Length: 255
Image (tube, rainbow, N blue to C red; front, side, top):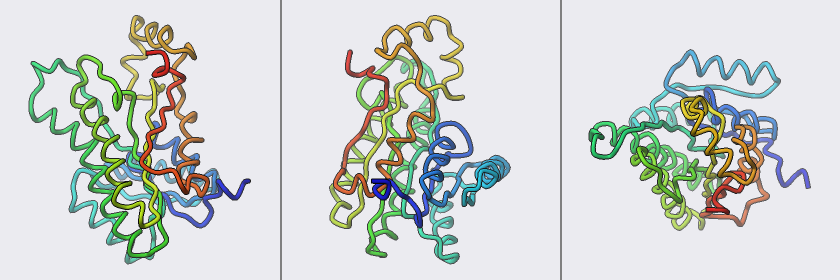
């Protein structure tokens, strides 16, 4: 049974993994045996995250680049090619949030959220999948969605559009790449205790609403996403493709 979830000998790139959910996922995949590639936009925070993993005895390296920049992404993969580093598992985690009513939203802010949360997943996955196909050994791609892949909330329209797009992009990737033994799936986190949600956590009325509307009566923790990520990255999910698994404490079940 443990072999089903063993990631030994595989290398996992987790975008946006210097902190928050991304780092928790990187820790979990490392604990399952994978070598981890940490990514972020700042070299100092990437290096710090790599050192934290190494201090725990994990095999880790890092590379700072902007996942919305296709030239930077291509350069990163070309560098890994030269160093004979093969990305077997990709977790498209990088994301941002921006809250503003639609009628007041500037096009530049809309585009920035769409690019970071949706377009980057296409850019990075395309480079990873090309190499997975060429190697002929398959691979795993995990996109990070959201509760807003299913339902909308006021003031987060670009995020909602992007995460809805992640659900359908995941299906599109599966439709094209499943024949190459690449399993592409997504995780839809519920309300999770992260830096990005800190303003909501500190908002007394919103915090109360999250707790009262969720059957679990609490926020989720980043580490509670790890089991699903390891499952989707492992041989245990070899016939699971094009799915989005919601890890939300039961929130969607009672809407």
